[in-house]
Image 1 (cartoon, rainbow, N blue to C red):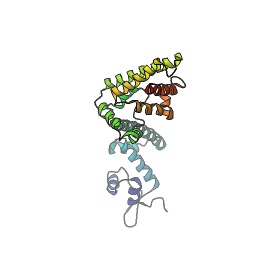
Image 2 (cartoon, rainbow, N blue to C red):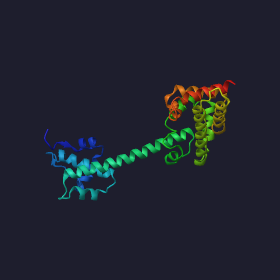
Image 3 (cartoon, rainbow, N blue to C red):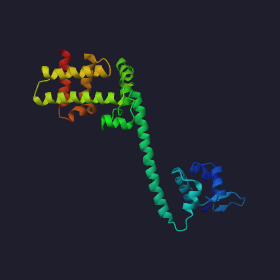
Image 4 (tube, rainbow, N blue to C red):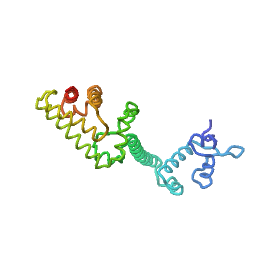
Length: 253
């Protein structure tokens, strides 16, 4: 294969552009093919393909065609430096798009959960904890339950201030569990079970009617699933087990 026997159709398919686009680039002098066949058809060399790659890269960055031509045709420009600069710019562009994509995905998952907050607002409320991280799994596990539907119905109306109140109340309950645990109070003590009941009532107040049976199920999840256990054990090793035992004791009495 000669250096310049890529047909316009082959180049169009490889680059993901139309033949008409390549014809236009030729007509305006942005990308002239290096050769022609005996029948007069355009033939592109390897260097033409490199230039096309640069043109498409700059187009992705939003530059107009005349500006792209001026950049590529600058006699003082170093081609390798141009490629390096464009690689850096495209990398930054891709990173911005990835951040936008992540924000959109977080917003979609939040809507599935009934959380009407932007990603920025969610960070303000929840910090590094991402409430949408396991949204799809939660929907798969509990999506067909009355509790899940009730939770979505209620939370769909919550404002940022409401979520801040939810988090503040939950943080206070975790702090009370931690205080009881560190004091050495048994999980069956009144002091510990008062906190467990406050936890159940908080869920009922904000999300759904948390019966003692449902509360038991949550307690089992707190120790069976390492991700949920970590929300307690990050404060003190073994706290998730203590919370589990206290919830069961409260449900039994």
